[in-house]
Structures are given as structure tokens and as C-alpha cells.
Length: 194
Image 1: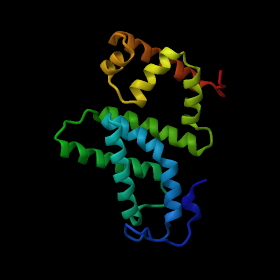
Image 2: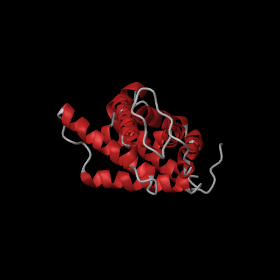
Image 3: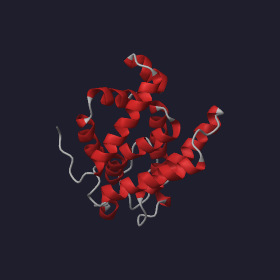
């Protein structure tokens, strides 16, 4: 259920501006908890760095809090937040003087996939991250360690190869097999732990 539909009186957050009605701090906190993980995935896909992604998401939530008066409660909060994260990412690219590593086409694909996850989660069929964790446990250890090093620890292919003491081609093949197995597992109606 959308917490925005059950709003209460505004409660000011000490360190930031008082939020405009009809959003209160408790409702905003619920939304932060619900959207933090998907926004981290989205930001991580944009910057390829866990720390920078965390900064983008944190800055986006601060900006959202300060600009709640502009949010239309009849619209999707996750979509609004992804727009803020995307703008913070563009600011980040300008600040660090980097060319964007994500093309407009890539950005559109990411947006569509995250929107689908959000829709599935809101409809109660999602639980993507919980299901992904179950599917990760089903992977053979060699594939699971490659996935964790690459996606969770943020190592590049060469870094994974060095940490696992294998060559880069083997890392690529393990990641390919792991993605395929995870996709197949996630497509099942109800994956069970092994």
C-alpha cells in the first residue's frame, strides 16, 4: 500500500526545512526505506561505484525532502526519486569532469528495468531482492564468489580475476553463466533454497 495515501500532520525534521503538507517525516521515512535499495541499484548502474552511488542516493533523498511540495502524491514516488538520482548523477559527472559512461540508450534500458521491478514490488509479486538472495544460494560456489566480487564488492573483471587467482576470460565466463542461472531462477514462480 502506498504510504502517501495515509498521510498525517507534518512533523519537522530537525536538521532540514519543515516539509510541506501533506507529507510527514514518518511517511517520508517509510518511503526512504521502501525505495533505498532499488535506488542504490539504479545509482550503482550509473556510476559503477558503491560509495558514489550511496552519495547520490543520500543527496537525492535530501533534495526530495526539501522539495516535497513539488511532488504530486498521485504520481509514483520511485519514478520521481529516480529522476532526482539521475539529475544528481549528471551533476556528479560535471563535477568530476568525466564523460558519462552510461549512454542515453543504456539509461533508458535501466529506467525501464527498474520501473518494472518497482511495479512488480508494488503489486506484491516483486520481492526481487529476496528472490535473488535465494537464487544466489543455489549457485555453485565458483559462480557465487565471482558474482559477489564483481557486483557486491565492486571489483572490475581484472580485480575479480586477481582476487580469485584466475584469468579474466574465466571471470567473464563465470559471470555469464551466473547471470543466466540467476535469470532462469528468477523466472521460476517460486524459487526454493537448495
